[in-house]
Image (tube, rainbow, N blue to C red):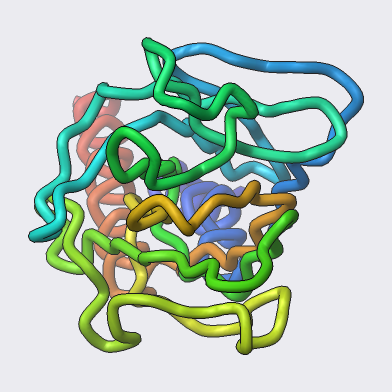
Length: 213
């Protein structure tokens, strides 16, 4: 007969086995219906995503909650202002303020690629990543500030692993939608999982001893 403490460790290991595996997911924002609000929620393959709207200043400082996120039917993910800013299409643009789409993932991820719609001449986007894991978005210095239309679409690059990532438009010439986002969830370090399994095992062993007394 298997000892209860051993069984507890085995179960803990089985429940967390998926955390060892790098998990890829593609969030597709091309759909036939509108979805507009303070937050747009998506879930793909066990990764939950909340998308909000924000703005950023010319110096790069981010102000959250100043825009609504939204999906425009057949165009993709955009940002909607609370007031008329000269552009009623819901694009991510730099008219009346630099729009920023803020992606909050339930798991730490790296972005593999971003696909755009209506990304053309003179369009650029600015990438933000919370690489310090402090809840503050910073311009990704590793990749530079802006990426222009001469780069391939989709844009393929690995970002720093983070729960929080932003994609924005700077100045009036930049306007586009995001059609899809491909990410990979970062596996939990094995040492963390083994520590958790060990603690669960000790708890099970303690309960087993108390039952015998």
